[in-house]
Length: 163
Image 1 (cartoon, rainbow, N blue to C red):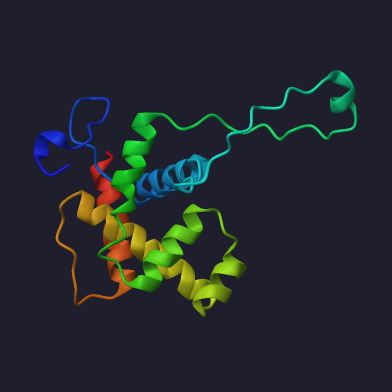
Image 2 (cartoon, rainbow, N blue to C red):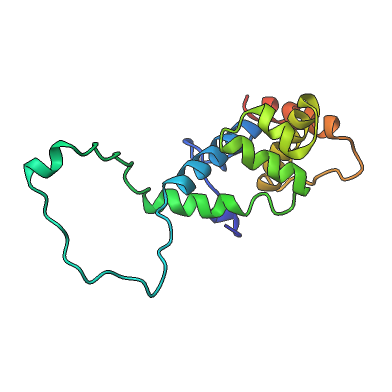
């Protein structure tokens, strides 16, 4: 999505204004699609035996198979592939926190993995979402400002843009 005509559109036909909430929803969707994709198969290993057909008496003692979700749609896979590149410009810790939250990891486990307190991890998560939203909106990211300033600026932008 490099040209302006390729940008996602809102319902009114105008350019979609990315907010941290929209970014979070898209990351959660991408994480769900990533989990639904089938695992890659090893090349070179195959079975020449025919499939076994079970009789009713064979099935009586077996436990039922777990039903799996259908594979994701091609459009969902395309959105997931686009979303995977969003965390490239972030600090590695911020990107890791963003993806762990997208995979619905509890805050306690996130804090343990990255070695931060809950409030610091939450601030870095919000900062990561704000940076991604600013990049998608093609806004300049202030480099010499604090995380809290960027978060507040993005909140102000989101509220004024949605009016």
